[in-house]
Length: 312
Image (cartoon, rainbow, N blue to C red; front, side):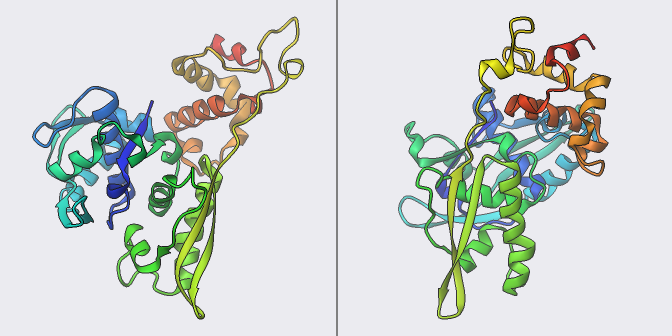
């Protein structure tokens, strides 16, 4: 299913994580919860390079190299947060890491504080930010992923509280001297992240400046879920002769992958991705992208009946 669940307290900590490190933590959270691998502060969690490759649309070799790099740096990362007793807690993300020679895998152990925050609090999901991994898997900027995490918990409320500038900068992973000028911060961080979230995820985000006099001291965001694509009326999607020719209902991911690999399908729809994008350069990334698009809105694929491509 790919549902990432973290407490809002953990989700809003000031941190400096790379995109690869965030992705490694996301996969660790999902696997520990949804694949019954278990999660504890003394039990290693194995992450296969094939798992990372599938989740983020890269080759296994690329996945393994990225995971190795992230594993080395993630061990050194520290962060702090305020616990339920209003005390400041300083900790690391992981307490142990190693790579498994010849297995294309790494093992990590989360620290006790992280384990506690990832584990559900008495089953009360109101305390948690939840989002499907596929909503952030295609985001290319670490700032986009972090902003999505920060605002996703406000999707029901539609509006966020004020994100005070200096705290907000830290939550995005910026150092004291990074993009200090507001124009640079907006252009290279905030606007970049907002535009990518609006383009690639299930959220529509806008922000407004919060000022004291003429000085910007923070930002407020409006957060709306994009409407789910409406299914076409029966008369548009089918007729008595062809049945549901342009839907993917009932097709498994494996079948959708076979469709995406069909040379005729590639010829029909290769215009949908940029030749410089990951999906335009890597077969696995193409397959991952097309499966997601087929599942999200199959009405884009109308050049011939979808089921015809299964013949490949």
